[in-house]
Amino acid sequence: MNLAAALRARGHDARAWSPEPLPAGSRWWNLWLHQRRAIERFAAAEGPFDAIDTPAISASRMLARCGPLVVRSVQPELRYLFYEVRSALRRQCSPGALGRAALAGRQSRAIVGGWRRARAILCLGSHELAWMRRRFPRWSPKLRLYFNALPPHERPALAEVRRRRGIPAVNRVRFLWIGRWTAHKGTRRLVQFMAERIAASSRDVFTLAGCGPAAERDLQPEWLRRGRVVLIPSFSRAELPPLLAAHEAGLFTSELEGWGLNLIEMLESGMTVFATEAGAVADLRPFFPSCLRPFPPPAAIEPRPLEDLDANGYYQRFSWPAIACSYEQEALAPLAGPR
Image 1: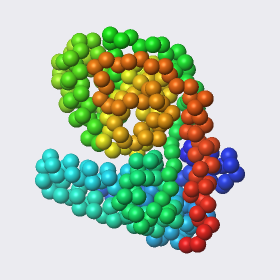
Image 2 (image 1 turned 30 degrees about the vertical axis):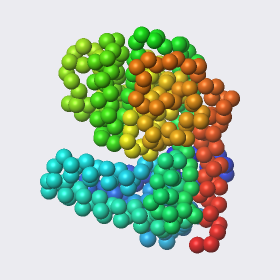
Image 3 (image 1 turned 90 degrees about the horizontal axis):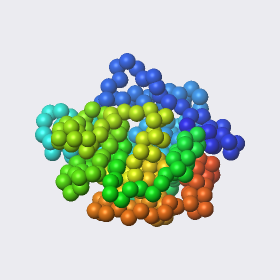
Image 4 (image 1 turned 90 degrees about the vertical axis):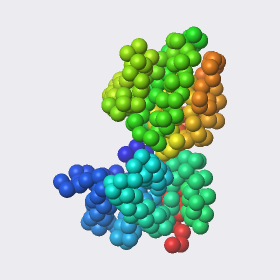
């Protein structure tokens, strides 16, 4: 929606569309098929289009007849599938796990087919672009890079938190981790670090936010009883700025990540974030040389001055007007060339 609005501001007739609501018979295993059929029906009824931007799994032969396809990822779909299947089979080689593996095979073929049919493949961030170039070198001529950004209306509140942020106390660190409690988010790595830190420091505390009810099962009950770990299963967008303001350091532990909006929310609020090499980390590091540091954190966290995000060009580069301009060059311009 943010991209469509930015493209409309540049004079394009950009329509943001969703397959929702899906039929009553939709289940987790056939959701992608219902979504694919819905966009096929919509494009056939409303097209043809000069460009159709869709996830790779929905980029079917029928859809390609309605307009040139731009496949723009919002997450590393193929790697997520492999990761989930591998994790399920490691836990238990059950009929359910084998069924998931069979379904993942169908979905993988659909994703690769979508990449093959696309006129341009937009990879979200440098990590994904590098992976695609290694695994699918034959498609290098149509691989492109694009970035993500927060909605414009959410930035002022985070900028105000950043402006008010003081120098953190050196004798106590309040760590914040935000995300769904799922394996690819690095939850095992996070719990191991928490155990080591809680044993080594008597004052540091951890908040796990947006994690749902599943996180409690993987934590030591004593941590919760003593207040060393605080769980916030869900929160509203209005609650995010005060949540960020109440913590000095963020943790980003993902093993796989598309971009990581929670990462940029923490960074824009002025938090020091200790991050694994996933998602947007490589693309954000030049703009956050002080605040974006490797995971895990050291025993003593050295305070550093905040970056000037206006002066270093961050707010301009990671904005939807700039992303829309890049989209014109990377995705729309190639459509004028030969098929």
